[in-house]
Picture (cartoon, rainbow, N blue to C red):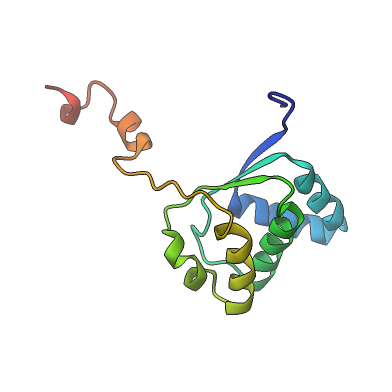
Length: 130
């Protein structure tokens, strides 16, 4: 849905990579990449939550290359940026991905308890009573 004239897409990285694999098998890979490239703000959640295959790394690189210097990409992850290169695996592809993500980035490191944990405790949980 457009907000202030901008289109945004929030997607978990594992689901996005699965959708791209399905698109490749269905013969609509190029159009799936084009759709993602047109989004003004792409939020990639759970980045590097699980190891990526070679095809998944290449898919991510294609997405980032299409968006580089044209639109905004927001990454959410529990992995510190200093570990991304090693976690990505293949050094050449990791270089390319990190180059497109890290060098023009604003890194916001959040601290404190998880909001999900806080919500899950609820107001009647013994740990939350005073």
